[in-house]
Image 1: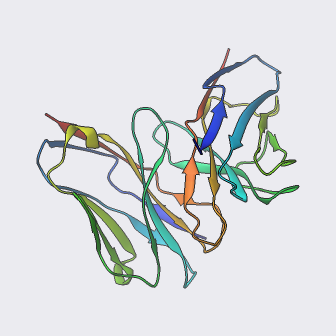
Image 2 (image 1 turned 180 degrees about the vertical axis):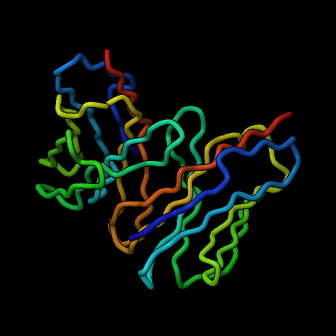
Length: 113
Length: 114
């Protein structure tokens, strides 16, 4: 089935540790996005990529890094510089053609040990 | 800068009641898109509708309807005869045209009580 797969579903980070969240899509979408959701808040943009090997910072990029080496994959690394990483992370992708309907994965819930 | 405001944080209704979720947006763009997404307890966001700024026609899909009014910068969502399965957090969002990031409101948590 076509869709967006995020893994793992739950992730725990120790102090000073970098962790990587996976996002894979088989929808042949050009653009991919990472959003962060905190309780009672809307989604805030971390990074996005409109084509392979190119990405742009969002509103809250500090403490995060990404890569886009393949069209299908857009992993997000939460670095030790991110002092408050506990949140729900959602990956999305959108089809070409300008309609900008974004389809979301099931999310990764990150907690700090 | 773009902004979306969902003033209703939480709403509770009894099953079969109608309920309207409000969304007010701000943008300087003349061309833009508006969206509604549903987030059930599982967490995944489910796309409900997209509207472009040139299309002010109201839309109805089953029990769902949307009222887009550019004059008041609003894009409200009504559920008719609500059901328990409608319980979720609903997000309104805004974007420029093209494959650009969405700007989300903070969401409205709807609880439908049997």
